[in-house]
Length: 230
Image (cartoon, rainbow, N blue to C red; front, side, top):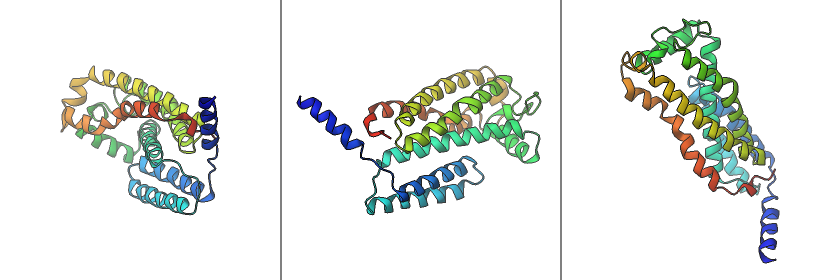
């Protein structure tokens, strides 16, 4: 009886989370800042907006509004930025690969880090990388995994129960895509790394952020899902 009473009290306690107007406004700023950070070009503006949003969240707490743990905000924003970065980067490389701006940045990236965006760039019917396997994984991520991850991260920040579970699902999908992508590029090692300035070390420096899913998974399972009650 005591354990049942304790559990019911815990659920009741966590069900009291109500988002206030200042928190809602700060979360909208977090979303805008995360998207701008994902563009790279506008990332300084995005960073400033994210910092402003964090200050607003602090003000909301001082005024007595319900708040989520800071770690949830940090992980949620990181997931948003990460998903927006690859969604926008890969997505634009397919839709605008023939433009001067995209070729300038993509070829520069290819010359320094990943030769797939320099040797044979924009020679396939879909544009972008000259490696067909790269484009297959890229389309999978752009059309399915990263849009779903953006939605999941937003629900996670808003303390929605579906957002919590959806974040776990998309993190597992992210890990699977990263491993498949890693195996794919390894089959074209000579083309993609032997022609670059920094070789394999440059690629790892740029793409190590993919591996954050391996860190997020154990952390997500350590959280109490009862906190995501909306």
